Image (cartoon, rainbow, N blue to C red; front, side):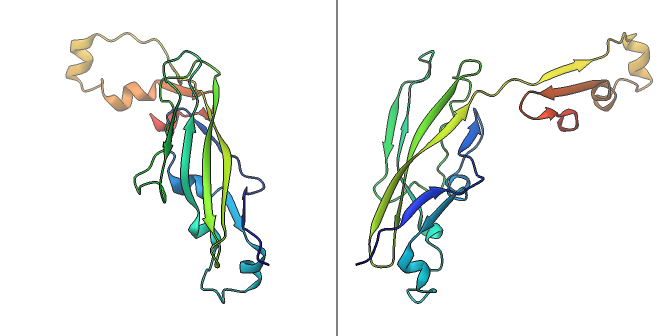
Length: 173
């Protein structure tokens, strides 16, 4: 008797992303572990080096957002998602502090053809806008401009940016 493989979120990993974040199949799969007792004990005799390389996405179910700016919908894939797949992360459609659980169905096939499908929730969290601060400064536009003092570097140097999720992001301006 040959058991079916298992698919679990790797301990220490989270299936959690922010609204608007680009989430590829690779980003999802690298947080998972596919395991099969027989294949793992065969020490690669079967030619399968890592079941994680065979993980597929066969269905994605999106719930409706609280404010109804995005309706619920589902995408099913016969074999796997296309190479350019991006998870819909509800960009600009979630309410402040809203969280949705997108249900992603992963599948894997072991060396003798046993197929396992596992539905795993992927959390999408509201992404707070960054806050940009700057000291107040007054320019005599013509004089400073003629001396070359009003540059983008000078203006950015007087500003700072913070983000609730990423803390100080001044260096990214």
